[in-house]
Image (cartoon, helix red, strand yellow):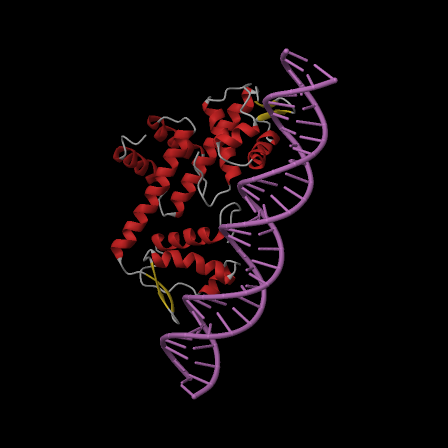
Amino acid sequence: MEFKDNIPIYLQIEQYLYRQIVQGQLPAGTKIPSVRRLAVDLTVNVNTVQRALQQMNANGILITKRGEGNFVTEDEVLLAKTKQHLLDMELQRFTEQMRQLGVKRNHLVEILTHYLEEHIDDR
Amino acid sequence: MEFKDNIPIYLQIEQYLYRQIVQGQLPAGTKIPSVRRLAVDLTVNVNTVQRALQQMNANGILITKRGEGNFVTEDEVLLAKTKQHLLDMELQRFTEQMRQLGVKRNHLVEILTHYLEEHIDDR
DNA sequence: AGTAGTGTCATAGCAAGCTAGTACACCAGA
DNA sequence: TCTGGTGTACTAGCTTGCTATGACACTACT
């Protein structure tokens, strides 16, 4: 995995895992890779991985079982809320950033549509 | 000005100035506040301000005149390109982030429209 | 009981970002 | 010529993020 500079790695790992979860690659109840395994896979230190997981554990999205591992919560409601929250954060950020660039709200959809048409084959 | 944690202040200042410029609050050719003035206004150190300005100077968006101050370029083409670039970066980021959250491209506009309707009076 | 895999914690060291303070170089205007 | 405002540069010190390393505690399995 590649990390952007200028933003803490542990936050990027957290974001990465959140997306794995809300997309379903890490379904509810599954055990995620161990901290040591993640550290190797992400070419990062164990402590950095743990720092990422602690916040997710505090948020209840991950259940930590000492000696066993970390598991994705089975609370489907929480999962749904989390996904919606991530979407809302992204939408809020986008609209705010565009506003600061001088784009009027009623032009947002138009600009996005135009952008998508010009980048049909991206990803 | 408030700064987000987890992202270098000098980058936020740079972004802030870029937006002042592309929005026209700092028109082409105008002198921007001095580094010391900006440092006070932004409650930040002079060195941090300078670091932000250096990059903008290198990009040609700012013209630095030693002993006089920093001036917004009068190159209208460059200004237009810069604004378009900032918009494209934001659009690219948004579509990419939404993709990583599992949103299909053909649902993007719909979701955005829905979001805007739910937040009519925001800003 | 022993072993392997797990999460957790503590220490030390390094780099980056930010601050405070000082000093220097340049320019315009009185 | 002098003064005030400007950009620039340097040092020292602090904090945060990350790493490397080692140690401990818990669980499941044999």
